[in-house]
Length: 244
Image (tube, rainbow, N blue to C red; front, side, top):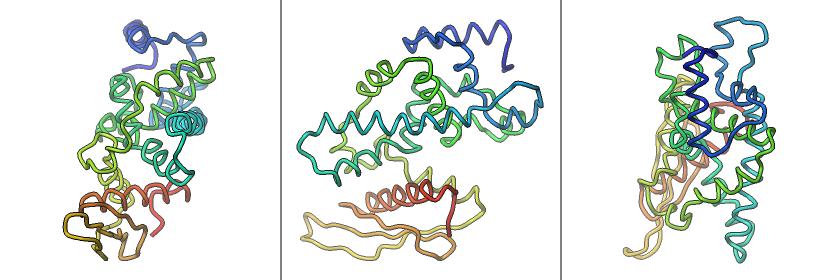
């Protein structure tokens, strides 16, 4: 899809109708959906990618989710709130929200990324969602974002024990990032404790033979998800796809 044109404008109009938010400055919406691969290929003066908006959106979403959790769980300590926030402020959850908003069909990708299935990649859809939230924030839609995210706030206590939850695709996201970096990984069960009916399993994840993170859960799969989540968060803090 071209960045401009009547068909694109109609698609963006319909998107705003479905979303329930209409931009005062349409340029923010346009830019939020432009992947860097398109900019690198088109070489058109004045065309910007969504990377700066993604940077802003990431910070805005962390604040919004922190606020939501603070109000939703008034009796929980800081450590529990932090764990819940990590569950929401992550690539899998943002990719899910991006797809629920229909972003894959609206993203502007370079031909190379298009051919490589970029519209289906969690990383690209998640980035577009963050960028769009950054754009809405700049356009004056903080209250809209708050209300919308509040409606999506999952039952976080249940998520911790449901591997199939839409917000717990940490293993898939981790695998995609590690393989993209050309590295190998494996999970190792390193311990278990507790009675048979209430065991806690402990799993470590290794990249290229080096330990990257550790997780716990009431099943081996849940522990692997927790380890993958910890690994993704560590990568995000380090600012790279793999630190092994």
